[in-house]
Length: 110
Image (cartoon, rainbow, N blue to C red; front, side, top):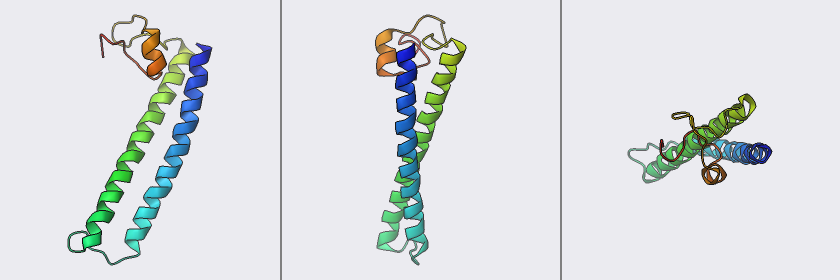
């Protein structure tokens, strides 16, 4: 599973970089809203700021969750359970692992 480790490490690096960028974007949106007297409910720009903050926040949560999945997959590689379905214990098809290297379950159990 040496190739899997390399794929997961590359995915972790990409996701960590994306997460850092998204967190910077989120801080920028929050800072921009702090510098105004905008009231989300009454200011026409307020709704846009709230939407941007919500959207970037959701992307931060999504990237954080993916990073946790990558870390869990790396832990499974270390303990020898990587590529085995967490539900039925069978080997997960190589095609599924190639497309989704963080998969915990086989297609049947997913």
